[in-house]
Amino acid sequence: MEIIKNVKGTHDIYGEENNAYEMVENLMKSVAELYAYHGVRPPVLESNSVFVRGVGSSSDIVRKEMYTFKDHGDRDITLRPEFTAGIMRMVVQNKLYATNELPLKLYYLGPVFRYERPQLGRYRQFNQFGVECIGHASYMQDVDVIAMAYTILTSLGLDGVTIKINTLGDDESRNNYREALKSYFAKHIRNMCEDCKTRFELNPLRILDCKVPEDRPYIDNAPVINDYLSESSKERFSKVLNALETLQIPYEIDSSLVRGLDYYSETVFEFHYKSKKGIDYGAVGAGGHYGKLMSELGGPDYPGVGFSFGIERVVSVLKDDELLENIKDELDAYVMPLGEESNLYAEEIAVFLRNSGGYRVDVCADNCKMGAMFKRASTKGAKYALIVGETEVNEQTVVIKDLQTQEQNKVKVEELVTKFDELFNSSKEEE
Image (cartoon, rainbow, N blue to C red; front, side, top):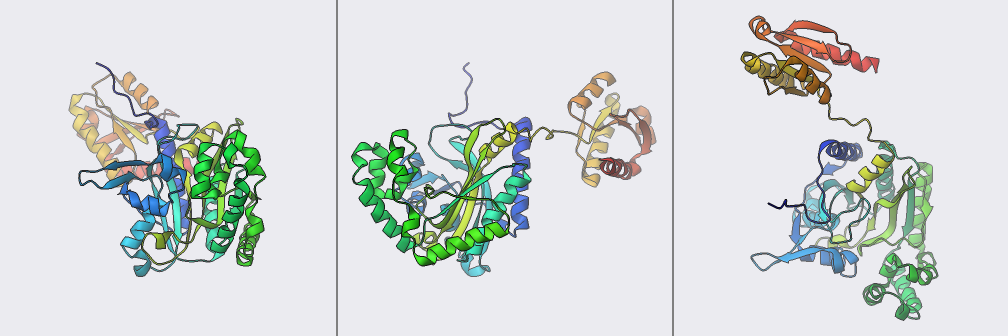
């Protein structure tokens, strides 16, 4: 019988790779909580209109990458291609802006779906972590969000992260800039790719995202947003940059950076990284400020700012830089029953250590020889073997063997958690 394989563009995560994902995700959540953010879990399925109205009909995501289908009620349903629009829908629908102090500070983690060509660190189903700060227009919220993202990457051990930053300006700035781009690209668009021709009609800013090499000379010589910024947008961007310098967060201005979603305005940014193997992963994370997204989805006209990281891409970078070498699937103890009559007692010991001490414990499930059990304990990375036989059952004791030093001693069951606490505290002090 033919083996059924996973769908193209998806991947299975297990073993030590899963441990790496959990380490990365837990660190990201911990940093977000240090910044006073709270977790949310919007659904994977959303009405198609959430993304058409929120992300924008001119974006590549809406035009080419969404998984959209009709459900049994003939409704257009979409697997979320990104989180921000869905979170904004959640905030508006549940009136979170009216029942909580602003700004709302929310973080999220979960799978997203985009029909695009699978490539380095990128899949058709992949995982995103990100944050949204909603309801406050201050430029300092932009700074705070960038600082959080930078803290996450440096806390993971990445050295030499490049923050590319730009401003798209306010409505006045972007309208003036669109007209300038329209006028400029009108002279060249017939020689450019079909995507650019579509973007020219829908939103000429999207042309700046084009990756076709033959189109780059036209794009590189296009007008830049800085020449069309209003005075208020110039001042806001200057304050953002000054604040980053004060916080000693390195950045470089990239006047061609526009981001791929229509809802962005004012500050936009990307986090770029080249691994120590010389592999350029491009943007491992990105984000920006948005001004009209909530009102597009039926809520009040509150601004926001956020970022997201692709977990797959971050894990790939960490793997390249050998920053995952110490992540092992280890046990605190492996319980070894000597004979079938000791099995139930071994399970009692394991449950007691797990529940009362919070230790990670496994039990040998087979009636095998002691040598084989020691080999299994070593394979599982156990620090201690707990040996129980008929004598230990009768005495209500346990033999503890340190698998590194080979030292062993016998303790009573009621003293087991206290003894383990002493052993683990001592090892921590030595480290």
